[in-house]
Length: 386
Image (cartoon, rainbow, N blue to C red; front, side):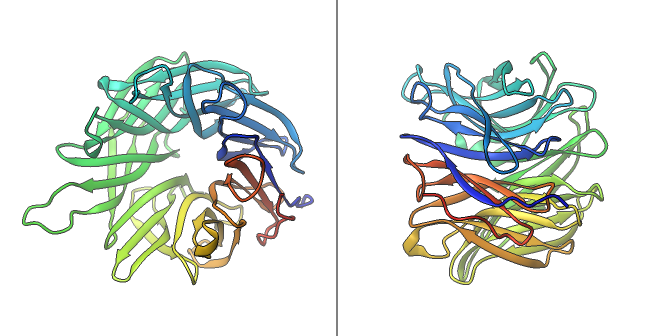
């Protein structure tokens, strides 16, 4: 086993920085995708950072563009480069500029190679997942939002060629159901899976319409293989999905009840055919909890991050929890200071520890700084940053 480095650090300057996704590369370094408004023209731009195992910076890259954008997802390519995606809009547009889904590829040192933005069917488009497809090109998952009608959004599945051209586009949703695609993962059979939320705006006979975690499995041609709706008394929403070693899926998000009012981080394990194996609610003793990212660990367990208001006087804290293969909590911990601190992305490190990325207003130099936390296998880390 390698030495498990532990550290906390911030990245930022006078304005805002955020980390939204992280992966570990074959050379044991970490690459983080997010956004910056401190470095450049002052508008949000996609931001990539590569760190050594001990947290030292190898390089930073800002994807300068005419759009304002944040990278919310990242995958490594077989070339050693990276693909990032998210949502962007033109800061030279009117007061309410349209939103585009964007896809950028880079080489192994973060230099941009491909820069593409898409708006399908004349509607606003958000990419929440950009994944390298088997045989070349990319699968993109997200949401298509009709102009002026955000409550009737549709889940979006797109195939983009390696050159950045649209191959096919599929939407899920009809009538007045609003379906959001918040996260995606590749599947073992060459397809991909998108998770998010489905909300019916009305139901026959009145009452509270369902607002459920929703999952759709697509084959490599974009055909729907199966759908899954997972309800909870008030609502449930999937923000992160990952392929598991048994070719099933692990999902993390939120679930809420009305009596008593309560929001928990919600973890769901599905089989490869969409059957529910188990569900787990995670919360702290003194506050609500929200799940934003989940990954499987080498021993078949899971690591989850998000945020909690464990101490309402001090705003939000980063939340980190370790589950075993059956969903039982092994440990949980929080990180943060006097203001708001949020975990958006997590992955298991090769040294047996974990790395979390997000944002902090408790530490650093700006309004919000990128927050990076590296722990050991038990969730222990180094001193808080200044």
